[in-house]
Length: 315
Image (cartoon, rainbow, N blue to C red; front, side, top):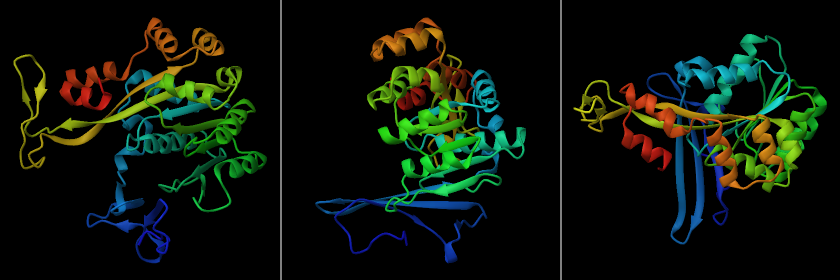
C-alpha cells in the first residue's frame, strides 16, 4: 500500500499510502487525508509508523495560523523581500510544513505571478501557482542536485522541504546571497541551535550573517475543550473531560512560536563563532520572547494550561 520494496526488510523505508489511481485517500467527511508510512527494521521485525494528515481549510492563510501579532507582522515583512533566508525549526509534527505552505500562498496573493519553486520530500499539499518538485528518496535527483539546477531556472522564491546535510545548506545559503528568497526547515530545538548547526555544517559565519534573515521556532500545544474547561480560583483554566473531547479535557491544537531576526549585535556574536550559552545570552539581552513566554498569552486567554506549555517546551 505504501509502495515500499517488499523484498527488502533490512533497510528503513518511507512511503505514501494513496487511494485508487494515485489519488489521495478521502475521509468520510470529504476532507483529503495524506497517509505516510515509515518502517524500520528491528530484531523483532518491522517497526511501522503511519502519520495521518488532514486537510484543514482554516489553516491555509498566514493570518489564521495563530501567530502572535509581532511574529505575524515579521513574517509578512519577510514575504515582501527579494532575497534572504527564513529557517523554520521544531520537531516533526510541529506545523512547519503548514506554515511554509501558508507563506507561499501569502506571497502569491500579494505578488501574483511571482515565480515560486518548492522542493519537497514528498509533496505534502498541492498549491496552485507553485512549481512543486518531489524528491524521491531512492532517486538520483537529490536536494543538492535539484537545487543547483533550479538556480539556473531563475526562480524568485525557493522552498526546500528540509536542510539535512552540509551540501544542501551550502547551496541554500548561496541562493539566499544571490537574489533569491528562500524558506526551509531544520530539525533543531531552538533558534540558537539552528544557527549553530549551520556553523557546524562548515558554513562560514559571514555567510550565515549575510544570508539568514530570521529563524522561526514553533510548537503545537493542545487546546482546552471549550465545553468542559473550568476556571480555577487562581484565574486559570483546567481540563475536566466530557464526551465532546473523549474525556481528555483537550480538543484541537494551537500554535506557539518564537522568532529571531538577525541584527547587528547577534551578527557580531555569530561572527565570533560563539557557543550556545553566549548566543542565548545575546538573545536574552535584547529582550527575546521565548516559546514559554509566548505560551503565557495562551494560558491567560484560557486556551491551554501551564502544564501543557511545560510539557511541550520541555521546561
